[in-house]
Amino acid sequence: MARVQADTVLTGGKVFLGPGLGFAEAVATFGGRVLATGSTAEIADLVGPGTTRIDLAGRLAVPGLNDAHQHMMMVGLGTFEVNLKGDHIRSVDDVLAAVKAKADEVGPGNWVFGRGYDHFQLDVKRHPLREELDQVAPDNPVYIKRTCGHMGVANSKALELAGIREGIAQPAGGHVEAQNGKLTGLLQETAQQLVYRAFPAATFEDFVAGIEAGARLNLSYGITSCTDPGVGLREGFKDWQAYLAARRQGRLPVRMYLMMLAGGNGWADKVVDMDLMTGDGDEWLRVGCIKLFADGSAGGKTAAMSQPYADDSENRGIFICSDEEMHGMIAEYHARGFQIATHAIGDAAIEQVLSGYERAMGNTVDTQRRHRIEHCGFLTQGQIDRMARIGVLPAPQPIFLYEFGDLYVDALGHGRPEASYPMRRWQDAGLRPSASSDGPVSSTNPFQGLYSMVTRKTNRGTVLGAEEAFTLEEAIGAYTVNSAYGSFEEAIKGTLAPGMLADVAVIDTDLFATEPAAWLDAQADLTVVGGAVAYDRLGQM
Image 1 (cartoon, helix red, strand yellow):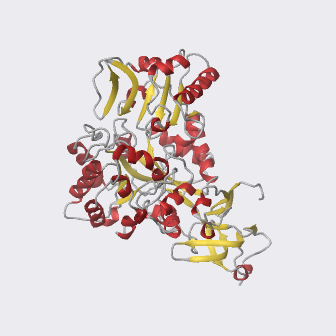
Image 2: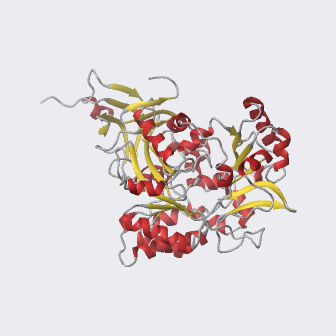
Image 3: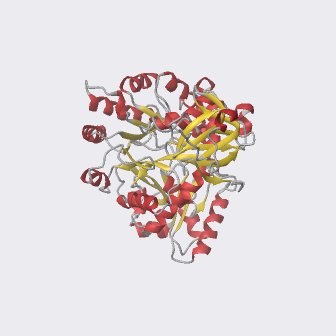
């Protein structure tokens, strides 16, 4: 009987098969799945005249990476907006110059959107002011979002279009800032919805193009799977339709797990009416969790904490909704059978969410429901123990320590930052912490995330909680098998064992043979999805 011939063979390098599985020299794929792994000689019999051969040339190959919490459509749309994140933005003047350049480009009357500034990294350690935005873009409505996404600044024209005036009632779960009775332009948490409603409607093609751009960026980092944790943030059901259209049009080259945002846009009700359920779909596009929000961000000092922020004794953050409201939503969606994922960063918000999960389960604890706490940054050992008892998964962003760790120390003092994002304690408790970027909040570069998990160093070199560090094998596991577990897909992705999806990232740097500092400059040379090359940095294929 004729032996199966592989569709694709990658050989001549170091293939990391996954946590606990060791290494191989080669991997063969057939029908989009891993056919076999082993030495080059062992794979040779599977190579035929129709087999595509990829020479690893000594490079490292790993299972395709899986960003377990990334707003991929927003990442893609952000490539068309003003980029206020990075080393080129160090002062308020830098922000204003970038806004002015965009305003001059789009012309009078058109909206200017920007994202990514961190006011703590700016020269004056504050947000830009409404009046400053007015000076550089007097004829354009402007809205720029802080890197966390939980607040932003509008200029006067944007505030006018949004109907925001001095003396406006504060929205529940949000804040419109005023100083000496005058609006500064700063909008926090749910207050941002006021200006969102004034935005010009994006076209459907804009959304599809954003999805495609975000997917292509992911492929360039070796990311083959992604969870979008906020489908509906922009325009509810339209976000979902755009993902479906991208798939139909062949413009979705990565695998997606889509969380459906609950809230006031009616999308969650439509989910129920459409009889969608967590897990529906296929290996390319799958229905995910119902997404809820409990608080804000630690960097923006809106994460709900049990103790006040170090430099603001009156501030313990913001709860998006009451205990009764949160527990009611959790109970409803738990009873319907959905996996639930709730954004909670501060320990007080985590307590609200965790107690809601416990109440919803009651005496019928099912650890395979895999409810999630997104971010789950600052929590107690007792809360970790309770998560383990009922099987609640943390979905953290280790890159936050790299990008924002020093800011956490400024905002919270020493103690809480060192104990935050406790990857080691979670792993030891059997909670399988995933890894992700929360892009566009942080860079989607997974090599920075790997560096952060192994070193616990910030981008300034500060070590925060070295006892929570991972080995490299564990860190790659967080970006692969653990992320797959969080979406009930560990049986088909996360390792390169035979039968698994043939998703592979080929990296130009041998992470296992170099110091962590070298990983920050690592790049994906090739990204293979379903056995086919989907990204080729060097144009060799």
